[in-house]
Length: 223
Image 1 (cartoon, rainbow, N blue to C red):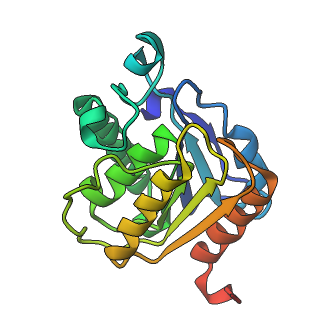
Image 2 (cartoon, rainbow, N blue to C red):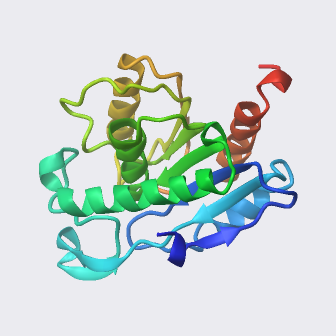
């Protein structure tokens, strides 16, 4: 994953990292403008933007496209996805986390962010596979296909769940279901929704910047 990732290096010596996974059919450059917008507020943060492999996606008529796993049907559960491909993406994400940790970045200053299908990989990895220190999780317009019947994770991280109220790709109820499970696990989770569809808006980017700054500088937080 790291070998094909786009890396937006920090403006100052990096002491924190955000690993940001794109959505289905998208690419590693999609969130580069967002990363660069956030850099002035987060000058010591390195942004790593991995690229999903190109592979057939059943719900799109078997068309090959960048995807973290195959989606077999429109359904929130594990049975609607290719679990082996999800686990492979999760393992690759874990190796990327480990590489940043081994480079000298404290895991408590490593954040996972994911949009749509990328967010599903992030939620699965952070709460069901990694279970070691992390800075936090950004879950954007996403869902959690593997949370059903899962045990409470060993570690707790702050989570920011964000969704468009009019999302026609990942309905807001699917995002709320993930949020509700996280709160039942006693994760410090915040929900924010916006008058948008399956996308990212400027107000949301501003909120992401404030949230990351607060997590990285807790002594400076005023809210």
